[in-house]
Length: 370
Image (cartoon, rainbow, N blue to C red):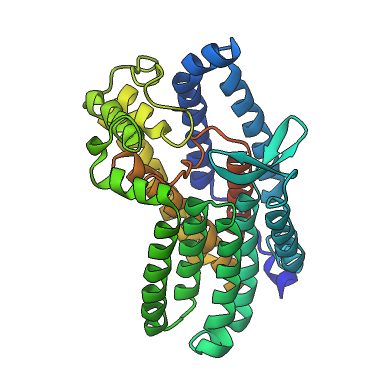
């Protein structure tokens, strides 16, 4: 079957590719603009962060173009091996001496001068495996015992291991992405309603079990109640976006990156973008993400087989959910989660895995009549 499908190759979706490259270029510019003050202070090198971002970007682009040339059916053959490797990495990061603690979470494994985040690998690995499972077992997905529960067990086992780090933000992205895939496979709404009740109860337990999560909720509802601690990031983010106005204060002229907004090149990079480029700049970037979502969904709808449709849907859902969560945090709509903004935020594992993911999406587009 796959041999027949892979004979019918078209050109990749150049619109999708152009959007990805545009976001990467904007990301490099904003990473430098938002980080050069911190980089000069911490490393005596204003180009420290952007040089590393260019390295990550180069590695990611090489991987993306390579993966774009690999027929997406290849990942189906190795889906079990990929998932097993992701589980082993999630277990390894919990072992003292192997896992590295950053920001209160043991989520990283050091590799030489660099580090990797296993939960990022799990997001893509689980999407690949779940795509295979749903394409084969779709006829049973309306059955709680035969279809819905096995997929649910796999998702929440992964979520549980991520929460042991703990990394609530990444876990939420993973669960929501998988729920979108399972729902579009034809799962019953009644099963999701029951799951929602259990999910809300579990979420409340997670919040109660960790005081810092309660602080984050409190800060989200009223950040000015504790402006020097739990509400600090949200307030500084809003102070960045507000003065941006329609056209911004100008590229490189942000005030908040001068030691007001912590690590502005990471999770809150959209705040600096909004301050420097204003409402128009922020709207342009959001428009690019919306175009990416539209082209990704179109690739999924036109994919030649169920596996390709689920795989494309999972990738575009993961990216869209991550964008929505990140921007919602920055503008104060939801509590701080620690989620990066795809293609724009500074980072190694996140950027590289994102580019690998869209490499698969671009390959699927070769077999879609767009």
